[in-house]
Amino acid sequence: MRCPSCGNPESKVVDSRPSEDGTAIRRRRECLECGRRLGDNPLIVIKADGSSEAYDRQKLMRGLLNAAAKRPIGPEQIASLIDSIEAELRNASRNEIGSKDLGDMVLVRLAKLDDVAYVRFASVYKDFRNVEEFAAALEGLR
Image 1 (tube, rainbow, N blue to C red):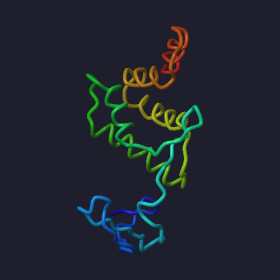
Image 2: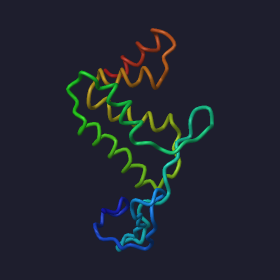
Image 3: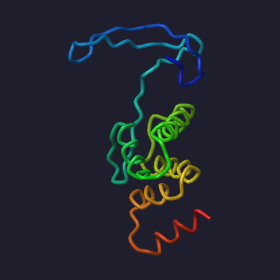
């Protein structure tokens, strides 16, 4: 496992325990280079209403796959986009992020990838209330 902080591929096991269902062994690892624990501190998304939930990569993947439906964007490109967001968050050592900030990070990357997918994602994420708001988002692409 490569350390998300320093990129070092070498780590050591510092703790082993059975999984909740008992079918696997979970191992907590520590980077030999920087000493950071790998897999600790899950990312928390703070939603617009103030509630929070654990970051779910699959939820973001589903939203992006829907936005990119019938577009020339492959799942590996979407995975790469998500990887770059996750790397940026890890490098900033952030444990919490607002849903608006996360959505903005997605839109910045999606605008570089495909305009139509950008507009589709933005239309759901920004919850446009009228045609003028939608038109303003389209103008931002130019």
